[in-house]
Amino acid sequence: MFTNCKPKVEKVVAINDTAIETAVDSLISPTYPKPAADRIGIWGRGFVNKTVAVVGNQTSVVQKIKGQDTTYVHLVDTLLSLGVKVKRVFAPEHGFRGTADAGATIKDGIDAKTGIPVISLYGKNKQPKDEHITDVDFVIFDIQDVGARFYTYISTLHYVMQACAANDRKLFVLDRPNPNGHYVDGPVLEKEHQSFVGMHPIPVVHGMTIGEYAQMINGEGWLDYKLQCPLSIIKMSDYSHDSKYSIPIAPSPNLPNDKSINLYPSLCFFEGTTVSVGRGTDKQFQIFGAPYYKNDYEFSFTPQSNPGAQYPKHENKTCYGMDLQESKSLSNLNLEYLVTAYAKAPNQSEFFNSFFTKLAGTKKLQEQIQAGLTPEEIRDSWQNDLNAFLKIRKNYLLYP
Image (cartoon, rainbow, N blue to C red; front, side, top):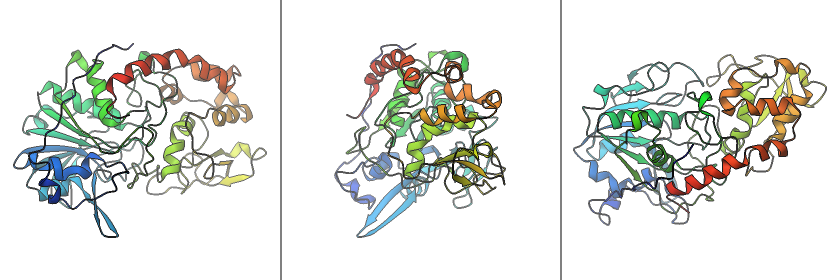
């Protein structure tokens, strides 16, 4: 399943490490993780007068601190101010500005602020076309991920790497903290269940940054025809996998805060069931429930269409379930929610839908829940595959 291949890590050398930092007024506490984008004062001038394409969204920002004031400037705007020629932007799921629903069609267009063409990489065309790669010098990838296999930004990364490999264009990945990087857990995806919500044989929670993950895609030969993407990772400073990091910009409409991001790997399984995870409320991925739990739970909510969730599950129906906003922060997948919800469901034959297997990456998890296995028994069943992944993962880590 995995190969034991030690990757070559290229160092990104700044033109003038000491002088350029003042080009962008960005000062952050040395004990707090500093994403690569915030270090643009060091590496940004290396792209001056170069033509680039940017793979980004609303999270692609540069933090600037002046006194007590903190502002966020989009990476594209910052690159333009430094004299970098941004030819086009590639947008992932949810679009360049991050306002589209999960699964919604994203169309090509023009960014209203800059006039730069925006090419969608979600929907029919997931991979950049050759002509959108060959007329630039480099491609820059800067998107905040949340560390879950079924969060599609790492699938977009795969297709961008494929296009860069096929057209011999270097990809620069600006690394960002993984808010769920402090643990690794879940079943490893089986090849026959590959999809856009799970492309690679990794566990549900992989515990890697987007830069580390890019190295794994190359090192494990996951690109078509075993191609290698010309790749450089621009690293963060002051980051470890145990670092506490609060994402300043919501990575997607239905992950509005740190609690939702922490619960997301555990609650997303409900997306493959008849249970709502709060889409259509202001507590997305912090609650779950369904109308048929009226006699089981006191907490209730009513999903309604909103800008981030058109026609949500159980729209305009009162759902009963659990409010997890005050729950303890998770350091592993919590299967208790899912197992208990299935056990309480009055019509278990209709509880799961076909999307569940894509999310789980295996048929075994559904079968185990239906067979009445406990969360502990289920977790034990994937431990061997998880241990094998952990050994390979070590080869690609850039941070302690």
